[in-house]
Image (cartoon, rainbow, N blue to C red; front, side, top):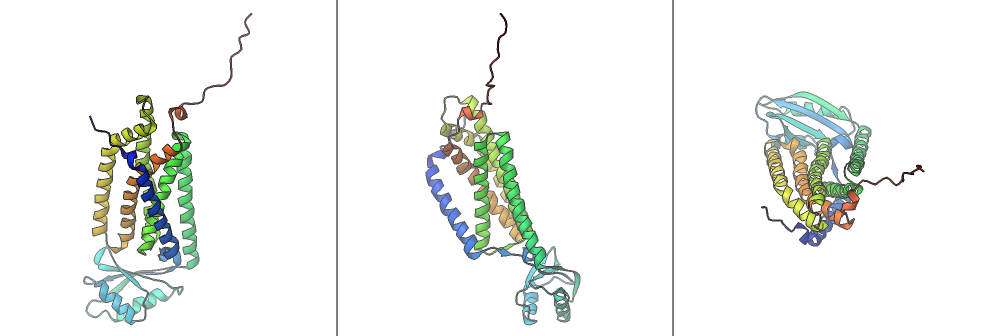
Length: 304
């Protein structure tokens, strides 16, 4: 029989660490701000292909010499492909940069595959819609859990998810990782992953209310979390290994996406144990909360 781990025995210490980390993440978020990519701020994207493997450092130096000091150069797919991102509101900027690189190409000339311009108004609209989409996802999750389980479970899950998003975005803001649409997609994926992990624990807590009738809520949570621990660890470790491979081999273009996922999976695993469950304790969840309301009307006997 698996020995029950007293997870909730250190819940106060975990709560203190959670508050500290959340405050630091919020401070980083509001003090430094997010390093929005061109998807949100507007600018020009240029995709180049070379005959031979391209040197990112050399290309970046050539752009600086040409006067484009804010250009971001990344490898893109094959070693012969590069992606250049530049802020600016001039639709012709991309063609000017491409021409400058073609002139200094030497024995490894560059050819332009595509040039895209995103205006600042479009970028601002994308940013607002992304934030709105995230809020709608959280509201939808809370409504689902309130009907699927009970409203206290919904509050616990939402607090857990908000923690995961704040910590992930706060770390990205601290290190000034470019926040673009791919990173936003990673944050939304974190919400889904963390929710799935939390629901597994919640479902076992609900089942154990029927099995462990004399156990307290804290005992129930400890037993339930221990019973689902192997599943949680197997899922988290396998997911982290896949994300680590993406971080190593995915290139600069997927670095922010994979890093956000990596942070979010770690935060989600922690929050499903020490945030979602602790909220259930604060709200004093009990077996009566899971009993469907009985009919209040009384049958009237009209027989003489």
